[in-house]
Length: 75
Image (cartoon, helix red, strand yellow):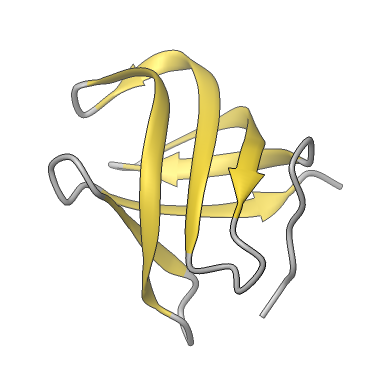
């Protein structure tokens, strides 16, 4: 599992789209995070609060509507 910190630039994948974004904040145990982006992803305009859903696959889900999202650090 990759460890993230607030301010990390990431690539967010949601609904078949991959867009750039940023980790605004993330819990020390990496379970919950707030991510931001310049787009609308499944009803989320610019920000999405997420909680980890599947550690092995790196899947998070929106705490608002369950939207599945993955992200990885930009290289």
